[in-house]
Length: 250
Image 1 (cartoon, rainbow, N blue to C red):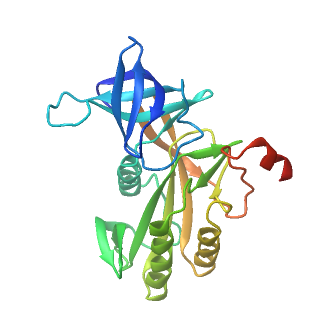
Image 2: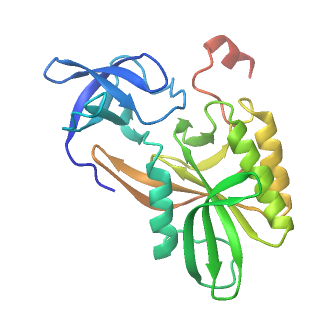
């Protein structure tokens, strides 16, 4: 996926979940739309290089979207809309391999309601299989470990529980984590942030729900799917946002 009309800037402050202020390389201060409601505290720090997408649209409240931020030597895409698009294309072209499916996918439909949830994808195969895939974007990283979530998610917990119900009813079910950066060795659940999610993911895996992760190559105005990354719910992860005193106790 390519972003047209991108410009470099530096992050200044996040005013709320949706709005931040950045400074263009020209020195101009601009108000931008943050395309991710996650906390992002470890990357959205004052002075961090960011990439903005410019929109010449008088109907918009802001002229810019914040789409990526640089952490050390790598760009991290924070556009919450891009994981679903990459997953859709990756599943259709076969770059994303869903484990345990016997047939070839002949139908992939977006945003389908099942029970009390709306899953990202509904699929059918030429072997008569039917199933659901829920996609979650992952932007939190520390020491080459990617983790989800960076804030507690009631919606995510609900989705996994309903995927288990779908699996018990005979559907195929999978959780797909799209890692929006490249430098990662393993993906996991941020257990300290949401122990209940780690527990339900563990249960889901034991009941046959597939859990997989793929990373992405990110440049200033581009993001593209790379390869599958191991998912290990028990992989240790230290939140880069916790203070040094707490780190010393771990």
